Image (tube, rainbow, N blue to C red; front, top):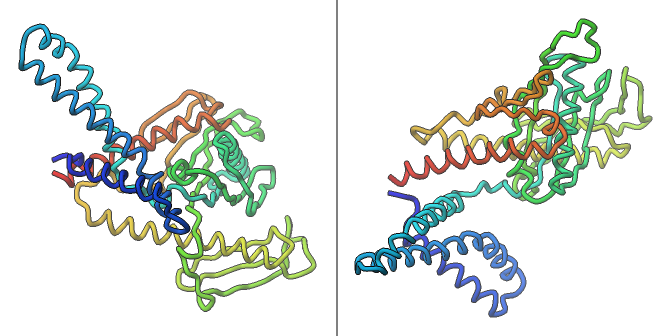
Length: 359
């Protein structure tokens, strides 16, 4: 049995018609906002469903003409393959549109990039990765605000955390979490040998206060004097903030701002995002454990991608995709090709699971 059932199509079209009527009859205030949001979300699905219903009727008409025989029947027979192809195309489109949406897809994100194994070269690579995401964000028309940064001794970053805001940010970046590996000859390498180093990327959907309630009693807040490289004092006041979430042991430290209040606000924003993602992962793990025959484990923490500079290639190990356009990927826009391939693979897995559940 397919997930694409005629009665489901009819329910979608009926609901869309009801929404149109409600909005045109003068809904106001919160009701108007709620109905407008539902209307906008349902519109692509309703349009595809309406078109699908039309081509099904067209095929039925052609079958009738074919059954009548004669010259009209022959003409109908010639037209039918194109209609069948259109039906198959719309069925696939509708199946994708009917897949359950990730509730976090439209959220902004907290992006965390950290140098891993490889010393100075790892910090340089972390800097390269962050600039790649900055350029991709500019390509997509998103805003990037650096929350905190710890620079490497010879450039790059030991750690950098930023907020990326815009339309559908999490939907586009959620598959970037994991270990990214680089293979190249460092500038400091006199022998010209290729080194391998790594950086980790975490993409956390930004949480609102209503999503994660943080109790003051669950927090230990320490304030201290900000320090720069070599432990030198940056501020003469205790403006740096370290927040420990006692139930989970998660620690967030923030010292980039001169104001203790601003540092605390930024630290709470990061903490809230980490707690929100922790809860999402817990619920996802529970759902995964309940399903049988699910494809893959969904674990994104292992090595996900390799950037090989001597060969000019980038390989995503999760989908075995290699692109010989490393420079374009690092410049930002070509990252779209990798993201689109990962998204399509994820959709295929969800479709396979949905079909199996419907069988």
